[in-house]
Amino acid sequence: MQSPIRVSHPSAAGFRPQPLVHHDRAAPGRCARPTPPWPPHPCREECRLRVARQWIASAVGICLALAASQAPAAPERLVFPNDPSVLDVKRDFGAVGDGVADDTTALQRGLAASWGSGGPTRVLFIPNGTYRVTGTLVVSNGVGPWVYGESRDGVVIRLADGVPTNVTSVLRGHPSDTTETSADYFMRNFRNLTIDVGNNPHVDGIRWYGNNSSILKNVRVIGSGRIGINSGYLGQNGPNLIQDALVEGSFETGVRCAWSWGQTLSRVTVRNARNVGVYVNATAVGIEDLVVENTPIALQNEYPNDWTWWGGVVALVGGRFRGSDPTQPAITNTSVLYARNVTATGFRQVLHSTTPGGSVTGTSLVEYVSHPVKKLFADSPNASFKLPILPEPDVPWETNLANWVCANDYGATYGGSSADDTAALQAAIDAAAAAGKTVVYLRGIGGGDPNWYTVNGEVRVHGSVRLIMGLGFGRIIGGPNGRFIVDDTSAPVVKFMHIQAFGGTPCVLENRSSNRTLVVESCDFKILGTGGGDIFVTDCPSGVELRGP
Image 1 (tube, one colour):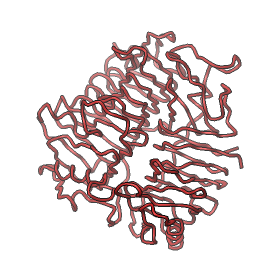
Image 2: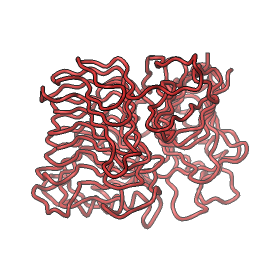
Image 3: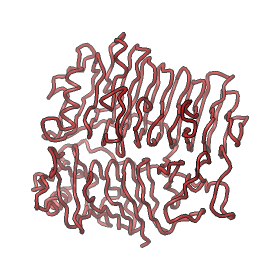
Image 4: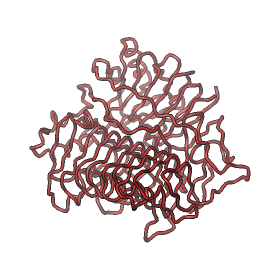
């Protein structure tokens, strides 16, 4: 049996797995798109191998994926090497982090430096501390930044109480709050930190915006405000991913998704929202393992008032809801909904829907579709396979900085010249493996084209090396034979992060092993499976091809 593949981002597409059980007989790896308002065919809910899943969901054909059922846990402590590709907001920009000093300017300067203003792209590292801000932190560039907190609960960016009404959020992922825009804002990365709205009822925690490859991961939003994470404040947003997020405190709405090109919510928990846990309108959203506690309505999915033919399309797999108002339903739906494995207590009923699928009383949904299932063949089943879901494996963060190896020290150089960086990358991996080291990284690129690393040959990842990572925008363009290879000499789990071709030809990333696991996050390789090893893909606008061994 071919290895399982798990995809956890709405922009990943182009799969061609051969041993796929595909019950609507569409082309391999793809599902026929229904015509609105029909819901996704159950095949779109589960089009995967064995116990992982590959899923194309929604009436706009966006590929979504679902992960394991577990509440988000606070992440481990992160560290980075003392390297020019790593910025420290305290060391390099004068942030204090004592909860008293105003760190707004220092953090804003750090964001700009991370996305490459005045130099190459780099990681912005935020050490543990409470960083007081008095205005909105704004990401205005088209690419980046790459922001990592030392720990989720230890790094707190807190908005001062009582800010003026022109402050609409603590953090915003787009230059504007209101101006019409395009879907050209890529590689937003915010990980391992807490956003504290303070006491500001009109303020959102995060106004999230990103296209194709953008991720909020291991983020907590607290305080008393309007919306915890608002992805519906500006059109053309998405596709993007929110994963392992916790919204708690006192917000009108936990997460708002609207007017975007699709979004995935993966392992999101909302607590104590005053009105709604998750609100969806005029976009397609794949939701896995949603936990909503002490909230009147867990999920609300509806049509926009002024564009009724483009309603919310929600596919929910795994929901645990605990209500605070016994007169309200857990889920309200007036649009397109697929849901399964949902439990709800403390509500009037689990689902109130005005669609042909009707409402459901009681406290659970085994499987529900809001509209009659449309299918190409009469013998196709009306229900999903209900296969179990595999989480992506944990790859422990390397905290021993002696185990980090910089490929640039072995001759890797960006610039897009005729030079080939294959040998330099292989030399760095070989040296790391020989010394029992675990991480090989590339410094982020900068400037305009040509500004990339080049791989024209094969780079074999072996021995103790378990993470290949760009610190910033790790742009690699591949030649006709350019590829990275995971095989039976590799570590049990190998992870790639922040490697993008971004308009150029991506390298092939091949898992040809019999039993090694490949994890790909925030990259855009051509992903290829030719052995029996598992593949997990998250936040990647990538094609994935599986060939039987």
